[in-house]
Length: 118
Image 1 (cartoon, rainbow, N blue to C red):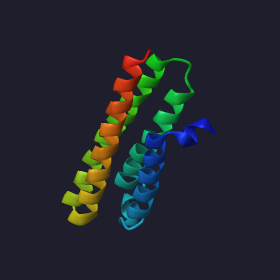
Image 2: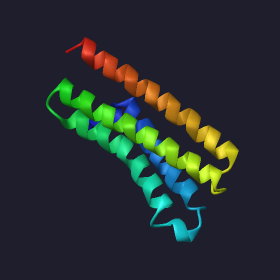
Image 3: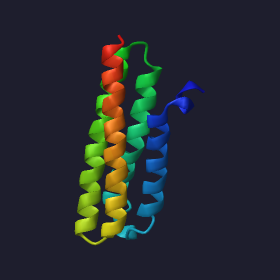
Image 4: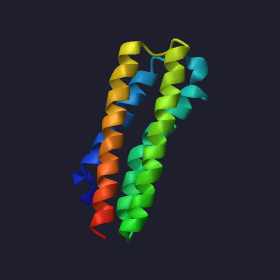
């Protein structure tokens, strides 16, 4: 499938997968609250990249890339909260933060590319 060749989508899928594994360690009482929100935000990133890529115009793709980037901001906020309440180590937080920032920069670069090549 064409989407599988898109690096930002692959990075988003890997991030979501790793977030799922990491949140397995969270308390079970959080399963339907913070854990669920974190997982939804993480899955939203590659999902919106895929949906945007599947649309018929660069303008639509740019719009969905913006939503994906917004989900990254949501995710980092939720991870920050998880760290603050002791569900996440500083090391795990820092590792994910770096990956989120890197993916955010790549999404911005893709957005600029699409805007310049309409």
